[in-house]
Image (cartoon, rainbow, N blue to C red; front, side):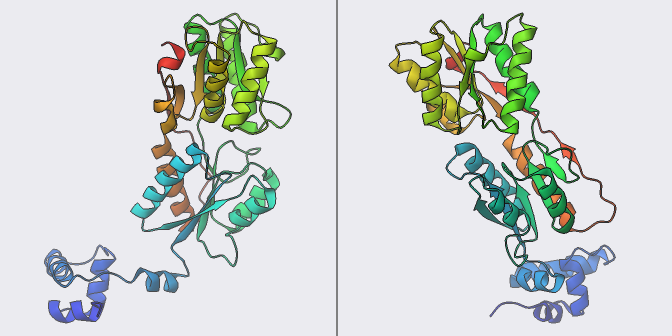
Length: 334
C-alpha cells in the first residue's frame, strides 16, 4: 500500500501537520525537524498524492497547448519543449490540433470543455483580438506568435520583422541581388506580413528594390507549396540568385524545385529558411535557417501560465521576445 502522511508522522514522531509543512516546503519548520522528517520520507518512499491535492485546490494539473498542426516539425519540436517545461512544474500537457479553425481555437483557449484544463498556451491563426480579449478574462491564457492588436494577455514571440531582416541581409551580404521571397499571397498570415516587411527593409538597406514578381505565393506553408512557388518564380525570374522562405518546409520544397530545374544551391541560388527544424541539418545541401530559441519560448510560456493560473492579483500582461540567431549552413554559401 502507498505510504501516507500518517505513516511518515508516526515514524518521525511528529504531527501530520508537520509532515505536510515539510512536504509543502513551509518555511517555519525547525531545521532539525525538517531534516528528520525528510529522511523518513526518503526512507519510506512517500510520494504526495498530487491528484488529491489538486482536487482540493480546484485544479486538474492539466494545461492545454493549442497549435495549428502537429505534423509541422516546428510545432512538434516546440510542443516537446513545452511538455518538458511543464513536467518540470508538475503539469501535464494536452495537445490540441486546431487546423487554424477559429471555433476550434476558441474552444481550446476557453479550457477545452467543462474547464478540464487549468490554463492554455495557444498559437492561434484564426482567432480575433476580440476572441482573445474575452477568453483571457475568464481563463488563464498565454499566446505564442504575433500579438493580436495589443490585447491584454501574456504573449511570447520572436521579432518577425528583425529576424526576417537578418535572414535577407545575410543573402545580400553574400552578393545576391535578385532575391525572391516565398510565403506571400492573399491568405498571408500576420506572421507572414511581418516577415515580408523585414525582407523588404533588408532589400532597401542594400539599395535593392522589392519587386512584386519576386514574391512567391503559398497558401499553406508546406513542402508542396514551397515547391510550386519556386517553380513559378523560376519561370517569371530565371535570373534570381537568392530566396528567403518564411519557414523551413517552404525552403525544403524550394530546394527540390531548384534541383529539378538544374539550378545549383548555393552556386546559382542561395536559400534561407526559418524555424531551424532538425530536418535542416539533413537536406541536400544543409539549409541555412533562422533559429528561434524554442527552449526559451517554451519555458517562458509555461512560467507565465503558471503565474497566471496562481491568480495573483494585479498582474500586468507581459510581452516577451526570446532570442533568435541565424544558423548558416551550405545552402546559402556562407
